[in-house]
Length: 277
Image (cartoon, rainbow, N blue to C red):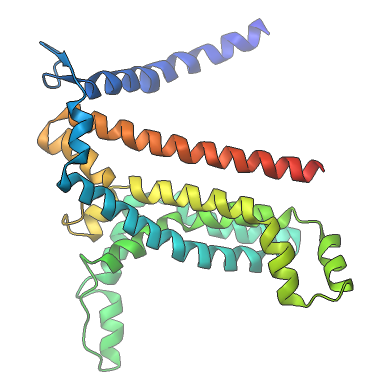
């Protein structure tokens, strides 16, 4: 045991340096004033109260709106894709899931620039439309461009948990449903869909949290005119230099993420209990 303790000691030290210490500083900044030098600081709750200002409430509203649309589309596409994948053999399923996750290996910034080349006024999509004599459309710097970028970035996080839940369903339950006279649609609704709800909840929570916290996609595909929660935090730290308010906003986003993770853990626990039964 002592040998293993020595092995993980460098990891623990590294985690403290790059995770715990910065997080403590963020908490300290969020409850203080006086700038980023921590001199002549005063404890206050004003940084959190500023979130209630109309301009920042609009940021939260826009973040939740675009996140909701992206998650809804991902849910439809992701469930359909996950369900189709489960129709194949186990080895083929592993290969198809690998293909789904391959885009995640590419840096988000590179994937976003790829969408710019597709959606720009002189991009491949407008050139393709021009072949049929159709008028070029302006896709960039719109809700459409941002949502498309979000979907391409978070879709695998919807497919994988749903696929895992469907794959765990005992095939005998589906056979029993057919034996009892249920057709394919009834079997899907009453057995497959019902038993895959934990995976759906996990997928929805993961994709929603990722969609509202990202800042690269709205900044590039939205042309800087989209200020989501992630962009607000980045702007406060880098452009404005208001580390106190940026830290308070980060704490609020962290709380949202923790609530989401708690719900995911709850449904995972319920799914395991149902599987044990």
